Figure 1 (tube, rainbow, N blue to C red):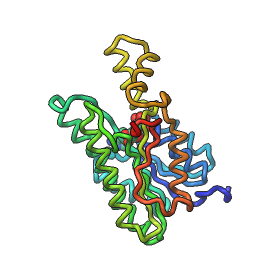
Figure 2: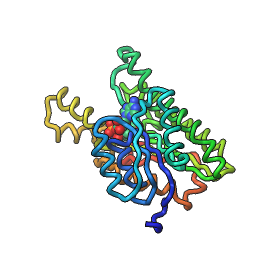
Figure 3: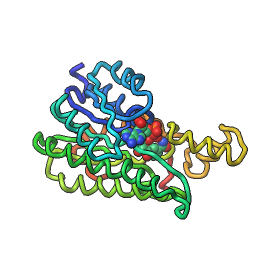
Length: 260
Ligand code: NAD
């Protein structure tokens, strides 16, 4: 086990009960990091998948839209493991509507969960990372942190925001062993995107397979989903010593989406 590259490190992954967060948690655990998980839904099943990789797993049910919950989660990680070495800000939600019809409550929730939560976890994780002179902060942004799509005002604003937060965090720590980078996936077939496929199938009266092809065809030249496993491998690279001078990048893994 000691040959694993992240042995003994503590990683906290927000929104790790599903999709990309679970994929990244598993990739970090496969390299030996102990994991603090967070998120809703199938908590037990998700924890079991990470525990099976032979690391310690803790769970905190903080609602990432609430600063007080986030403070409690970071205190829990400190008490349980002595702090966080690797912070992955991944929790996120989506809502699709034109600006004039966008529910104010959904705007507030998306900004809180997809952007402000990362400010809170980062401000609380940094002092320990700075004291140790080692830390990795990985923000799961989106290709929507780089380019826009219609009907996603809150999501695109939050994701552009987190790319900006990534750069500031990287710059403020540039002379330390603490890096911050963003990952910008294109389409990944998780529950968050399955809802958009289902909505397209219903709106157009087409099959799920046809709706999937249309969804990919609109944006993603490779016509392939990026996988949580591929994103997990990129996160492991950002945590490696080889990536110690990779600072403030927004790295898209998007099948060519943003290259168009
Ligand atoms: P998902 O719905 O599968 O997972 C979201 C996770 O966040 C779940 O664990 C959920 O419980 C958690 N979560 C949601 N609201 C929460 C809250 N208030 N407090 C705590 N946890 C909460 O979605 P996903 O596709 O895996 O998305 C993960 C991240 O990746 C998001 O930030 C999303 O914007 C981003 N992303 C997804 C895609 C994609 O195509 N799926 C593309 C680009 C970026």
